[in-house]
Amino acid sequence: MSEITPDLVRHLGVLARIQLSDDEVTQLTGQLDAIVDNIAKVSEVATPDVVATSHPIPLSNVFRPDEVGQTLTHEQVLQNAPDAADGRFRVTAILGEEQ
Image 1 (cartoon, rainbow, N blue to C red):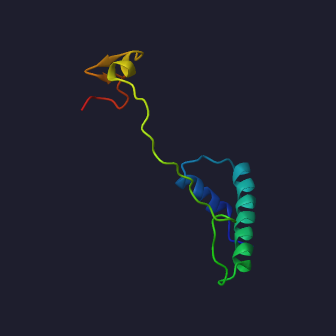
Image 2: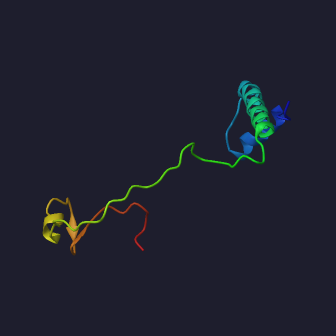
Image 3: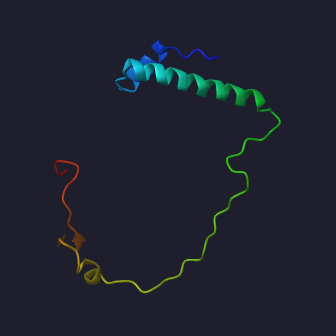
C-alpha cells in the first residue's frame, strides 16, 4: 500500500491550482493510491537484463526524393488573400502591441 493520503492529494491540488472538494479528495486518494501500487508492481516485475523499448517493433521513416514541381508566382499566391501589403499576407496582430 502506498503513502497517498488526503493531505497529499490536497497539496497536489494546491500545486496544480485545482480546487478539490472533500468528495474529490477522497476519490482521488483511492485512485492515486491504486496507480502508485500498480507502478510499484510493474517495477518489481521489470528486470535489469530486459532492454527498455518504446515500440514493440522497430520503426523507420519512409522518405521520398524531393522533386521540383510547378510553383505559383507571388501574384498568384496573394490574389485570394483577404489583405496583403508589400508582397506579404497581412494579418491581425495577435500578440498585443507591435514591436
